[in-house]
Length: 372
Ligand SMILES: *Cc1c(COP(=O)(O)O)cnc(C)c1O
Image (cartoon, rainbow, N blue to C red):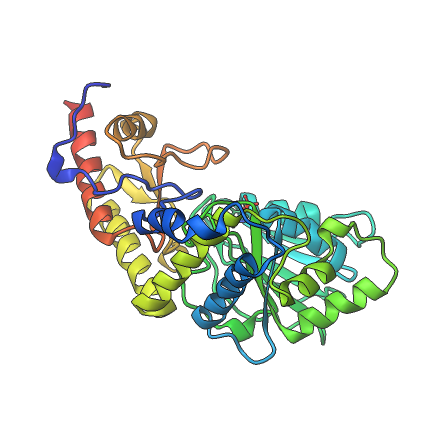
């Protein structure tokens, strides 16, 4: 098995198909060296780094065509830190959490903080989708735009709950790869190691005026909030193009380059078409062969940025992924806790649709070789 050599005609130009950290384009890495030469290794309290943060915030405002009054906020710690920050500074009394995979369930755990009422958790098994339920007394409705662990996507819609209830969307793996209506959300948060082709460690979010008002009100209420997880602190610092403590400047540089690239290529609509093209290539192929099938049964729920493909039990998906890896095609293994005989492929914006086409050829070749 280890000696299966995939013919060159099926080898993608770039073999990175992981869901995060994900493919970083060569031009971004070059920008690290060129543009980075005057910024890396300099103070984050001086103008060059603040200008970089400002450029990221402006680039995201352009990309998402930010409605009036919305602000781009950022802080250190990644999306996981944002869940705790939200428990301290965004959820007033009770959240509703849609949980249909690993990431939605993790926010539900953070929202079960002792100073809050137990969240209303709506669960659905992996591969399917939970739907919003309107519940009196819920002041934050939270769901993932894309559940990365299973490849299920949810439409971005406002939860029509109590007056003032906020719609808070985990867009970690969707942002920058899928078009949606920003005005349907109050907080649309993400980290840059997926469609934004950067490294992890920071979170970014689009905040509506209502969400900022909520943050201000809870901060003034006297609730204990650790400084590092204070959203009020993040809002105040972001307005000055800075973060509470030292950010990873290389992460910001890679992110800024990717945002500029997407904006120059045609913006979110362009990225949306590109990821749909790539994921359709995988789903169409999986439906056309008898040994594979999309894991997500309902075509409407299938993700355009993370395609999960089940293989027939007669073919060991682990072996397929291992042969791909030995040939330089990496990170097609499924989400570790899902435990399925599956390949999971990111079709993020940086990933070339032609490379996804080649990947399908490579998988077909490997399956044939393993069976002979
Ligand atoms: C990757 C991911 C996270 C975790 O992001 P970190 O930056 O590693 O904390 C959260 N939610 C979703 C949907 C993800 O895909």
